[in-house]
Length: 379
Image (cartoon, rainbow, N blue to C red; front, side, top):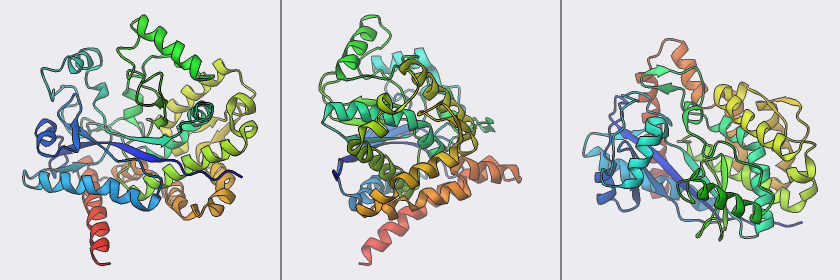
């Protein structure tokens, strides 16, 4: 049995604001003072990228150290890092440019407005073998709704509950609107070239879908899978658990293409399969773990929680063999107690204000960093 360990890296988008949970933009200043951070088109959020590494033992520090540095910078301005993947507690209609001279930012603002002003986690898994990469893209796209359901953390927008668990994925403009299940690298290259030629993509990066291939020279030179569907996962143990589950699914695929590659294992044709995936994503964005989804193997209805538990059961022997089973434990806690959006909405339904709900999560994020670095310093 093959036992590879994939390179794993993260693109982390964050909102900044006040301790009372109001979004305040400082990205252009932060990026000058802290070179590890880059701006997004809107001033209110920014991004950092972790170095790829195969070892789970180093991922948590890689995720938390930039957060700690940013927090120290923000403290001097009486600001903090905000949870949530949407503009939860501010004017969500006004675009606040981080760089008024950037023509790409002008294009984004004019075409999409604040629909793209969100925060999220992009998980990158290194795969240089192209047949495996495109098989992994197929599998992960078919199961992407499950990872959205685990990560959902955007039930608020502009100081109101939206009625969904991931407002981010509901509002974010999928581009192009119809993305096929790619058969292989050649299919992907021809499709991207056609979309660029027709102006349906602004550039080779303008593929905003739940999961996509990535690499140094897209679409030609590729070396990783990037899952983009997850909301901001502020708890790093949960993020590592989700990443471990993704890696275990890809290793399972490598060991048995006939069982795990949707081209081999699904009864649906590729057009119907793409539509099934898109519909599952919308259902998961609305109701996350409570949603009833369509299984990619046969189209049968299955509860989201049950499907995730099915995945955990399926990868358990491999996880135990690779000494990764303990990494998955935070997922069971989410299945039992609910994801971030569900916990927030439960508190809100009991009478807690949105402002107070977010303030508690601000403290929880800070406490995670304090506990981690205090524990490290005491060794």
